[in-house]
Length: 161
Image (cartoon, rainbow, N blue to C red; front, top):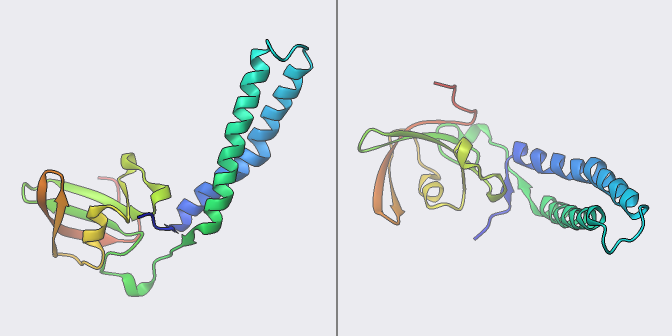
């Protein structure tokens, strides 16, 4: 199941990528292909072939982004969400061993494990939706059931430790 939800920042990032590809990258590659084509025999021209391959790749990504941006629904948090976990929330969790983790619940287009962004479709996010501070959450994982305690919920990034 893939939801069509996105945060405002996530939508902007995809839109910026589309604009960059269409207005900057594609014209640069098109110019390079034109220059390579002017050199003569295209059958043995590696720069020409590579440029055409890169153009196809850019065009594929542009088509995807245009369609995806049209399908996405931007979700902003509202005051009624304060104190509960919903889409876009930053959550601090602690397990039984005392390990603390922080996650942000985002759309599938925004997954970024390095920045601890998890998709709303993940088992962890599904278990967290609607919960509040001090609730205990059981999450089914491949290693079995894991228990987490909710320490904090906010709709802005946590301050760096």
